[in-house]
Amino acid sequence: MRRREFVVGALGAGLAASNVLDSIIPGAPAAGGTASASQLRTAIPFGAAVRVDYLADQFDYKTAILEHCQMVVGEGGLKWIDLRPTRDDFVFDQPDRLIAFAEANGMKMRGHTLAWYGAMPDWTQQIASEAEAEGELVRHIEMVVGRYKGRIPSWDVINEAIADHPTPDSPYRESIWQQRLGKRFVELSLRTAAAVDPDVQLVINDYAIENPTGQCRAKREALLNMLRDLKDRDVPLHAVGIQGHLLGDQEIDKDGLSRFVEAVAAMDLEVLVTELDVIDNKLPASTYDRDQIAAATANDFLRAICDVKRPGAILTWGITDRYTWVPMWFTRDDGKPNRPLPLDVNYRPKALMQVIEEYTRVPA
Ligand code: XIL
Image 1 (cartoon, rainbow, N blue to C red):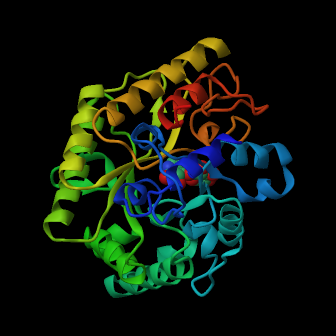
Image 2: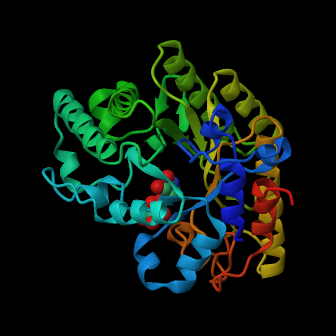
């Protein structure tokens, strides 16, 4: 039995009534039998960002996803740049193919992402007024969340809303939504998504909160302030996505990250690890050394989170070093290929995969 089937089987076993299962895999199938408490505690679902075109024509890639993942998220496909080539068009080909793959293989699919500053088609720069921005954002969310209602159980509604260097007077990152609507684009997006699908897990997703730097401390504080404001005003919100694009050459602020997770949990919010990978551009040339450092960094990161609250899922941003976004921004001076993900370019598990399995496997 493949690890994935065992985990889903153990999780699905007799947990239908428990809300724990919904916090693990919202809407997971019920099944007979019972999972042990220890299985429940350690069976954190694992998933990966997927390039859906490769599922069709790369056997090894598809096999790796089937072998290791209980969840998938489109690396693309549900971003405005892919979905909305023009103001009047919605192109659902990629997410339709990915949801079909997920459902055919007993996997859950996450939606990424509804409101982001990045990957926006040029026409959105023509959105000129607050009223026009509200109309376009609401229409987009209603069309997209509505299409996958009951099939995508968890959405990154808001992605990277906090500025890279937030200040108390200016915590939010520039985007067409923030420029036209101010911070209310966050509440508008969450309320619209909840109105379309009351059962969907609404997630605010961000990055660079895990290091002992002034920037990370400022981002943690700004993100917590936003979350508290939303919760105080009863804005629908269920979870925080910690992306986890870890800088391999920087230590993890284990106390700072644990305190952040404590504060999130105190707001009755779930935690997800949504885009884990280890950026190794400043690590030693030796692949063995890099892999060991990457694994140790990821372990510190996951330990700091899991010691406080069990994440609802752990997803990496890709499954194999063969296909990763990292060299888009973080190439190595020595020209060697990056090694950020759990499997190497030939789909062989690395030390990072062993660390992830320590947190996601179900004990024998
Ligand atoms: C990246 C994809 O991996 C690239 O293929 C694409 O060109 C740009 O976006 N944080 C996020 C993701 O939330 O959506 C980004 O994905 C990586 C950083």
